[in-house]
Structure formats: C-alpha cells, structure tokens
Image (cartoon, rainbow, N blue to C red; front, side, top):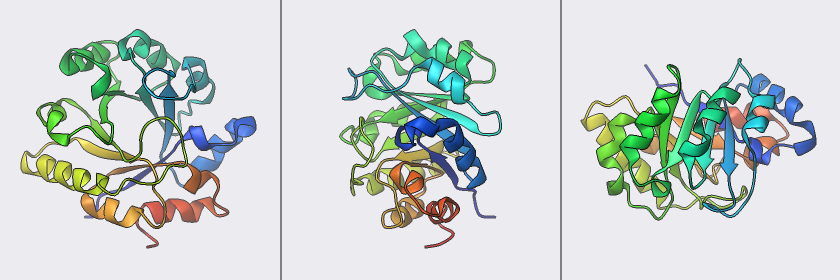
Length: 221
C-alpha cells in the first residue's frame, strides 16, 4: 500500500486580496492541509501573520498547519491554538529546551499536534534525539523568510537520512519539506521519503492547480 502524500499550500504565496477564495481553491484542487508561515521579523527576515489571520482563514475541512518562525514560540502558542491551529511547528534554533517546549505546547490542548523544524544549515544530527517526540519534522529546503527561493539540493540527503532513521526506529513521525518545490525538484524529495509537501508559488501561480497538486504528490512526474 502506497503512502499518501499530503500537499499543503502556503498562504504566504496566496493572493492577499482574495484569501478566502484561495482557501476554497486549495480545497477544490485536492490539497488536504493549509500551511501558515508565521514570521516575526526577528527569527527570520520578514513579517507575516498573527493569530487573527489564522482565525479568519482556519478551515475545518482542511488541516491547519502553523509554522512558527519566531523567537519565542511559547509566548504565542496558546493564541494560535485558540485561533484554530491543528499543528504547531517551532524551530530547533529558537528554543533552549526542545522537549520542555514540546511538552508545554501539548499541555495547552488535548488535540494539538507538534512539529519541529530546522533551517538548511542546521545539521540533522542535532535533532535526531528528539524525533520521536514530534508528530512531524519540517525540513526547510530554503532559508526561512520569503517565498520564491530555489530548492537547496543538499536538503535531499537530509530528508533521506531522516527517513532512514525513522524507519530504523519504527517511529511514526512524518517528514514535511518546505521550500522551492516544483515539477523539477519534487521527484528526488518524494523518493527520499517526504510525506508532506509545502507549496507556494508553484501552486498559487499555476494555471491548473489540480494538476499542480497531482505533480507534487508524484502522480504526474
């Protein structure tokens, strides 16, 4: 039985004046998740959305995947959960104690899922001791901050090594990949073992968004 590949359109790349319509379009195109890039201008260079943005767009028909690229994830975690987040992913580089942060977030809600992300230059070995504590590991394949960047090829090795580690230990942790994914870069990412594909411009600028989803799922390569 082949595993299901989940496609998560990132609202950072959506048309800002038509966000409600963009959410509907994502669902109609076959996406299962919505991805919210929350950037505070400190952890990464950009300033994006707050809890009210998530609250306005959280769709109960889609899984609301909130990526906290902020320096103090615990300060705002509860607000994002109350706004409708189904998953909160924070950065390894942003906290002093990974497990304490993970446990604190889980205590805020009986249903919240938690992810851990790493920047491209962070060695995978730094997070391996923590993998089993998380529902997903988000591999950034571009530097956090802006959409439209090119995929960093060395990310593929990191994805494959993480997938092998998860399989060896029989963990259930999923692998999410974010950055520069399109029809040319997606094949090695899927072959390496990715489960969840975050998509920005490739999806929102596509003439045929259903086809874009099929490509990212590996159905039209």
